[in-house]
Image 1 (tube, rainbow, N blue to C red):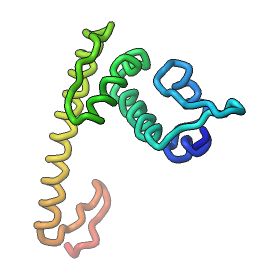
Image 2: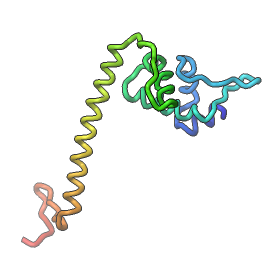
Image 3: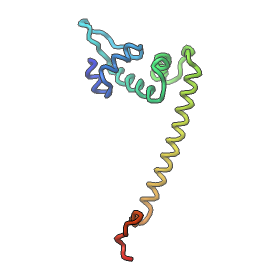
Image 4: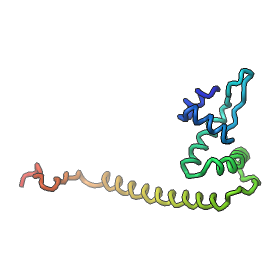
Length: 138
């Protein structure tokens, strides 16, 4: 597929896909006319890159860990990978991700509890805003 199709399938602008190539985290093939072409695995790779960026990793970190992540995904188990240059930075990012997961899990539980209470509760009576009289007979 060409860059426009990959952009459409991933929601990532072609300009950003070219940047990913420039920094060495996306590797297109080149056709005889010089156009970039991508196989179907590029869709997953671009989505994974987006997720890693959203998790706070830099493109340098992604360039180091992405080959190892791809190999682990293909083989179903971790592979031996070279030590990253910024091991402490990766540890900080992992810690940050774990904190966010904890917060998301607590929020999920709170929302589920709230929704469960709403469904299980008898029809709720609307609460009037302060200073506004309620339509309920006094």
